Amino acid sequence: MREIYASKIIEVVKDLCLRANTVLRPDVLDAIKANLALEVSPTGVEVMEQIIKNAKLAVSEQLPICQDTGYVTIFIELGRGVLLQGDLTGAINEGVRRAYTEGFLRKSIVVSPVFERENTGDNTPAFINVDIVPGDDIKITVMPKGGGTENASQLRMLPVSGGINAVRQFVLEAAEGAAKSCPPVIVGVGVGGSFDKVGFLAKKALLRPLPDSNPDPGIAKLEAELLVEINKLGIGPAGLGGRITALGVKIETMPTHIACLPAAVVFNCHAARQAEAII
Image (cartoon, rainbow, N blue to C red; front, side, top):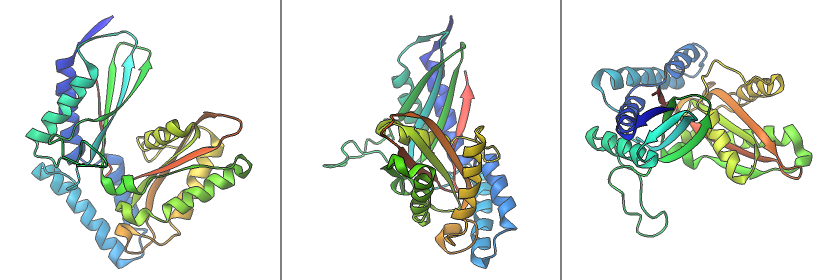
């Protein structure tokens, strides 16, 4: 067994929150640069050039990539050989609290979703997902996500008889609302599981690097086809028209009930914020 103390988790989560909000994922920046040459709309080209400039300024000035510094989703891979000294949830939330307070990041979490909607003042609680895995490390991945992209998310219990065509049509219908998500976007798709699991699958799909494909050849083919179809919608950068609406489509699946075909679609905007570390 390997001891890991809560104080270390606090330190790492704080650093990851600050880094994710100021440093654009390198694969996303590379994709924007590569797609710049493919954009036919002058306005779209100008938008993408501004995105690249903004990403550079965020790093040099140590300022957020976007004013909406989001709610914080945390993915934890907790090794079975770890002996955790302290409260994992409390440590994660303390790391988020310190990052958003000391880093002067916008706090966007409200206590009650329906009534007073009073701001918590420190962007906690974080939304935490924990997987128990082999090993004696803890892998922490931080993904701040803004309200615009979250509001464009969709979940649907599709008819089993519709099969892959129903999934394809659902994704394309959801993508018609991508203009609200500050395109060019990354599209995460979850298929299978249950009502409560499929949204998590879609969000987890957003963590995958843009150059990779699903290891299942059939799903990889669907990812590539959907990317082409979404970029035919003409939404374009910032929703102002053009060829480059999406940078990638990532699909994750899991087993489901014989009577069910759950599907979910979530988006990451061009400010795709993510940072990870292994303790």
